[in-house]
Length: 409
Ligand SMILES: Cc1ncc(COP(=O)(O)O)c(C=O)c1O
Image 1 (cartoon, rainbow, N blue to C red):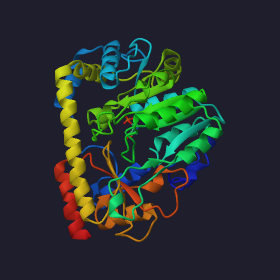
Image 2 (cartoon, protein in one colour; image 1 turned 90 degrees about the horizontal axis):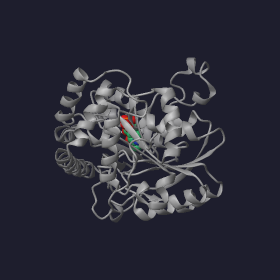
Image 3 (cartoon, rainbow, N blue to C red; image 1 turned 120 degrees about the horizontal axis):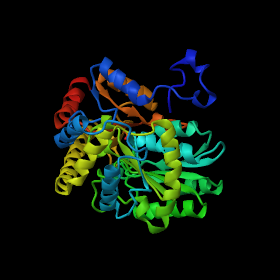
């Protein structure tokens, strides 16, 4: 998942639980992209600005608000606006006073949640491929990951093109038999672009319910769901699951400013208490001007609804631009119903099936940075020629991918 050899000297001074963690693949590919003057489709950060209204609101609050510690769970006004926003997105009601925590990005919400509820030896079910932060945050708790595989469409015929990754239910049943304390769901899913259906969520969620386990549902890509027939559903909206679910989201993806680092966790009061206990011992609170600026934008319902609709449309268009370019270049693509990632199998254009080697080759020769799929697994499968491309880039950047492919092959 991470390069264990990146810092061999200091590794010996590290606590055991961090020994297996090194530089993240996202930082590494970004460095390589810069070194080779390549287009960075590795890291999922937009190369364009989010809404000016949000920047203006933040600047105003920076000049006028108290600029002192805010209440640890979050500014009251933001918690109120988040409760309304979450209800609008998911139909689930949360009490702004007792069921919402504002965090330093979804990353901190995940870290607090996992650290609040996992003890050494606990089992956590994680669908793989998986966003790599989960394994890093779990490493700190001493809990044990039980991976459940998701299978890609077979890249052996055009008929399979644009099919979704599927949950390997056999692998899921086996994982459940071991008993588990927690299960992590991520929908829309990074990296596969799958949006879990309501039936899939029910099947997974009911297994958690039966095991008296907690569900952590990472829904940061909630507004980036593109296929009307397979819409985004929040795990918490399934009535039996609301009270065992911690739902996590973030302004990073909603407003296209990954540097804003405001996330939130919504959960029933007894779970919220645990998250807030860890939150007060890590960052304690988030910058108040950022919180109030965000709250102001969420409160302007007419503006918000127009913004979210335009954002979704524009990302759908970006997905289609990159899809056409990569298909024409000979990649086999699985379907992307959500997120801003396309998954591509490269076996027809490059024979080496080690995805890290392909990514290194591709960034140097085609001047395009990708993320190798090996980084999304605890134990990467062998001969797995898949890479992830981020399309959260300007149309101009996406079109220059075609030029690079034509020029450099
Ligand atoms: C699935 C997923 N969860 C959480 C995060 C982290 O979000 P934030 O930037 O708000 O910490 C990311 C960022 O890429 C992500 O892809």
